[in-house]
Structures are given as structure tokens and as C-alpha cells.
Length: 399
Image 1 (cartoon, one colour):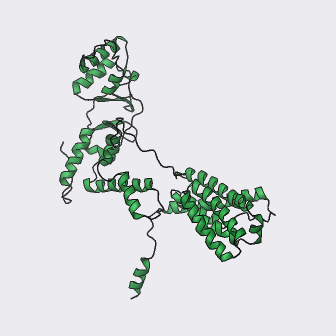
Image 2: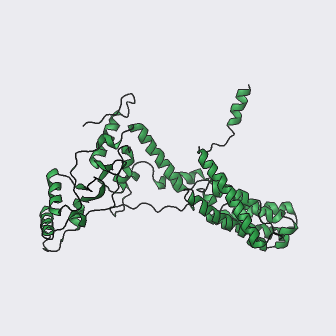
């Protein structure tokens, strides 16, 4: 009987996302530091003997949001500054014009919520700010609209500054600005390849409108979480296939001082489109591709647009040879590379959305050990799809 009662009681516990002990301590220490700094600075600004409250109770609730859930839309700078300011203005107005404290409190909180929703500045502690303006007693009432500036305005600003500094120093992005949508690298109106299958932002927006409730998470965060969940499902479905299992290891490489005509000859000989550029210790210092050759060719030299691509490239290489140009002159120096233990499903965004056709694989000392191409990735995902419906069979790759 007791077990049944406890089991039913547990259903009333909020289903919070799991967080680590370090994250809990980070939030606790942040709130301690934020409230302490706000109180100390307010004391220095207003004086220890002032009748004005140095800290008002709603700041404790604001601290919970700003330090424990800094990604929440309700915890953003616009929310705390505008929300608290609007609520204070409405609360003071209700206190001045409505004699009955109960009615003034109810009207103040309800109008504050309405105004915050209208200005997209919903901040739960602001409801307490409006209530404090009404029930704060003679000290608060004597301040009149000065209550909006201090302590409300001053407390809100100081707590926000503390949150901006602390959250960013401890690895939490704050404020939580909506990211700019990733552009198609091909400069077309098509959505990114990874967005063509599965749900789209428009689908999510439609569902949220149908849900029709205020959620304590931004749509972009929800979108990111759902896409990461999809990726986790891919990991589970295709198994733990790593780059080391599918990468090429017998690689053609060049050095920065390799003449361009020799680099071009290697591309032709091995029928490949990219060459890793390494130093004497085999550390990756760049990559040179067919595109690099094309972008550095003098296409207007002849003026005849009917000359074939291969002939133009040969001509460009010949001219470069005469000028003693080397790989260093045209290579891409900022190279994205992966580790042998990187899961192949992690390569999909880079290759599909960012247009990367080759990803060098480097060990922990950044020495080149292999290369993964789009063909390797397609083969791995295809092999995984063949065995995905047979969980008892291990995933194996040919070659």
C-alpha cells in the first residue's frame, strides 16, 4: 500500500532534464555571487543608512532564472530589464490609484503579465515586482515612481551584469541570441541537405502553434535538441562505426614547397580531388584541391570559352610551373580534420551542409593518419542501413 502511495506521489514530481552535479554547483555559486554583488554595489550606491531597500525579494527569483536556467527565454536580458520595469510601473500605478490592496495586487499582477506578453518580456519574478510595489508598505509607497529606478532598476541591472560575466566565464552562452540560419554553401534557395529529410523549422513552428502554451525553452533550442536526438538515434541504429574503420590510410600527400605541377600530377595519377599538405613531422598544415587550382587559374588569358576544362587546368599548371609557384601559394591553410575515434554519423553535417568532400583524419598529435571522403561516408551509412534491421548482427564494412 505504501509503495503504491509513494509511486503515485512521484508522478507529481516535475520531469526535469538530468544535469550533472557540477552544473548544479555552478548555478548555486552563480546565484550566491550575483545576489552578493548586487547587494554590495547597491549599498555603495545608495548608502548603508538609506531607507530604500537594498535588495527586493523578486531578485531572488530572477537569480534562479539567470544562473540556473540561463538559456530560458524568461531569463534573457530583455526579459529581466523590460519585464521588471513594466511590472514596477504597473504596480506603482495600481498602488496609487486603487485603494483596496487586494484588488490593486490582483490587477497589478494580471496587467503586468499582459504587458510582458505583449512586449515579449515575460519574466516570472516581475509578477512579484508588481506585487511588491503594492504591498511594500510606506517605504515603497513613499518612493512612488522612483521605485522603478531604484531598487528595481538598479537591482535588475546589477544582477544582469553579474549573470553576463559569470555565465560566459563558466561556459554558458548568455544572452541566448537566436542563431543565424546556416546558409547553403552553394548559394541557392534549397534547404541544407540535412534539413530535406525529417522535420523542418516550419514543422516545429506549426506544432508549437497547435500546442498553444508558453514553453520555458526557445524554439531554436528545441530544434537543436530534437536534431541531436535524431543524431543519437542514428548512432544507435548504425552502431559505433568510427572513422578509423572506413578511412583510407595509403595517402598521397604533398609539402608546402611542392611545385604545383607535381601536385597536379599526383591528383591526375591517383584520380583524386584533394591532397593533404603535411610538414616533416606529418602534421596537417593545409589541403590543396582541384578547386584551388581552378580558382587560381587565369581563365581570361585566352578569351576562348570553348577550351575544355582539362586543357585550361593543364595550361594553368604549365604557367604556374614557369613562375615556380608551389602548393603553399594556393592551398587552404585552415583545415577541418577529425579523429580516428570520431563516429561517422558526426561527419554528416560537415559533408552534407558545409560542402566538405574530404576530411583528413589526425591522431592526438595532429599527425595525418588517414582521409575520409563522401564516398566512404555513403558506403558506411549504406552498409549500416542494410544491417539496421538486424540488431543481433554486428555492423561490418567491406575493405
